[in-house]
Image (cartoon, rainbow, N blue to C red):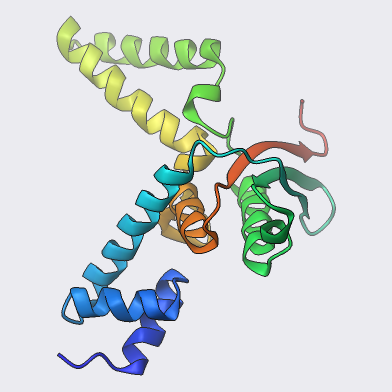
Length: 199
């Protein structure tokens, strides 16, 4: 199948990958757009895993203030070099993450960072629900495990579905950016402020 420039452009628009990477991915998948997207995402994940151990001591603190100035977010996103921190792609990612945090109100960056007492409380509620429904102990445990996974996905920033594109998680966006920039990039921490809300 002939790979047209229009196909390359469409894939580039979908993935933000480089022109040559898009052309190569379409070539490898015989022009199948969905398979090419998956292939580029897998490559992004591989690059992200290779870079994961590298130090991230540069970056930006990005802010987002919602219309009406009643809700605001500060997020720190780190990378390896000042050069990458100044790129539009990096800055836009940080802005998108700050806006996403304002909209989706995650509890922590990673599931491991969610306070243990909050997790224990949720697990207790799920277990009581299962027992009240008359489920046997072993089934109740499986239900608790499944519901906790869902809870983590809703409360952990990196696992949340991106508010602008629910097909991707924040981790997917991060992996794509790491692949594009060729550096380790990490969302370090965030703070969300809402007028009238308890800290």
